[in-house]
Length: 95
Image 1 (cartoon, rainbow, N blue to C red):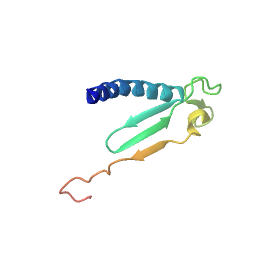
Image 2: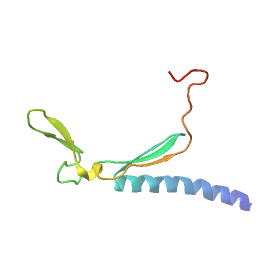
Image 3: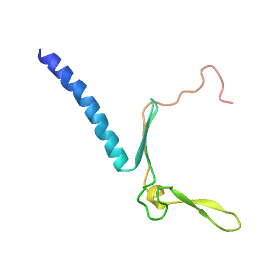
Image 4: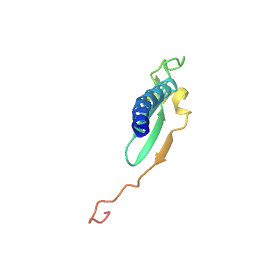
């Protein structure tokens, strides 16, 4: 009976933890990417930024117009955890 209670408690805790993590990532303006090779947290532009107003960049006029990235997300570090190494194509030389 106690084992069944632990299983039910675990099943209830996982969705709550996932919802909490999603709320924290959204509030902190992070994007989560995960696969079997890595887990990445990338900063996203802030909608409340007075410079870019959530666009993340703006056009710079001049002879060669180009996009300039806003510091509301480019000055923040990208976090990456490597899990499994990438494997080469089996049976083929690299070049």
